[in-house]
Image 1 (cartoon, rainbow, N blue to C red):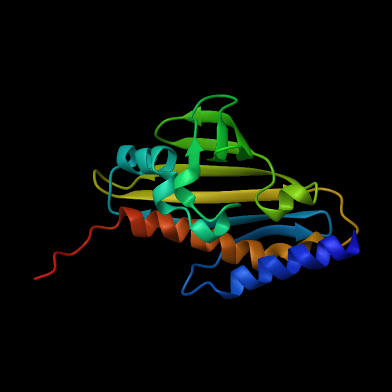
Image 2: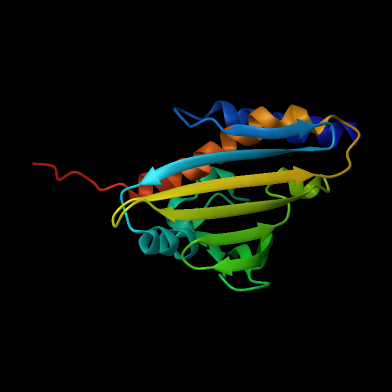
Length: 183
């Protein structure tokens, strides 16, 4: 178990250190058994457009280096109860999380362990909450609560998971930002 923990930790740290200018989470709680992180962005689109991007365009904004096979275009989210947040590359397939709550265009809730956390036996709840801020602006809150039994202190994962989730939410923000016309 200890070698698996070190390998997982090393991979997560390496990918986290590669992050550039990502937002920091608010740590809502943390202890040896788990943690809750929350991040929020505001995007200059309607909540309907933000929802569309969140559930239908995940392969265009999720970082490819945070997939099992290096290609985010292989990701999909089925926005229905018991739907799959899956990665499919031919016969290589991964069910990252399972959809448990859908209320368009305000709430998407998924359960499961993301990335190496899945292999560690951890479980979690990932919730996206979208709140209109006028007609063309939406606050998107991402909250991840994860826990489970491992022989190590799970609160040590907080900085790494924070960085990775900052990349994910930052990818959604970048995808939804208007591009400036180049001359």
